[in-house]
Amino acid sequence: MRANGRQAGEIRPVTIMPGVNKYAEGSALIHVGDTRVMCTATVEDKVPPFMKGQGKGWVTAEYAMLPRATQVRNQRESMKGRPGGRTMEIQRLIGRALRSVVDLEALGERTITLDCDVIQADGGTRTTSITGAFVAMAMAMDGLVRGGKLERLPITDYLASVSAGIVDGEMLVDLCYDEDSRAKVDLNVVMTGSGAFVEIQGTGEQSPFARSELGQMLSMSEAAIQKLIELQKRVLEEIGIRIGV
Image (tube, rainbow, N blue to C red; front, side):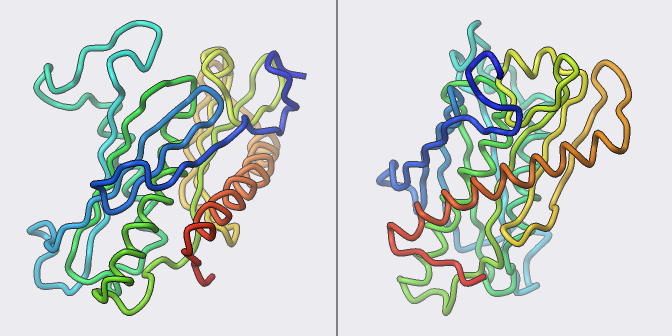
């Protein structure tokens, strides 16, 4: 039993609240334990210069952590003049993950930008951002369908993400900050609703890990992600969005 009462393969309590921003084409506030991320989707009828004339759309993401999302105030990156390396790496991950389940040709020449702003951080901010951003993106695309701009929802599958790791010799899923800071191995897994892997980020923070350990962590992550996807389905279906996969 973990310090917070969870079993090794148990995720933290998760809540996804859709439609929390009245201006954005899609939005969701997601809570995973004490980690909270506001995800908003913006639709623009244009694509980046490198995509022009290809008849395809684009999905991209930006990620930021509010100054008091953590115990000590962080300086806003806008004050530093540019995003840090960690921020760039995370927002590229979010964008790659979301594009993997989008039919860009069906989207047409328009861009959907997902802004993921961490309100409160207690581990797993990048995985939480992906899970919440998918809901915001689905809402924005559904708005295009309802507005007659798209014939169908250009989403090929559900998508969610979770962290895993080895802490004090035990394999755990959905690490909080205290567990993550002590992890011998740190893993971030992104998967689709059909069980396909999109991205696996694994690092031996303190020491190498065995292939058998990797396999066990991936199995635990897959079970956890399926629970997250079940929640996504319920949340979206409650507001009339069904993804035909």
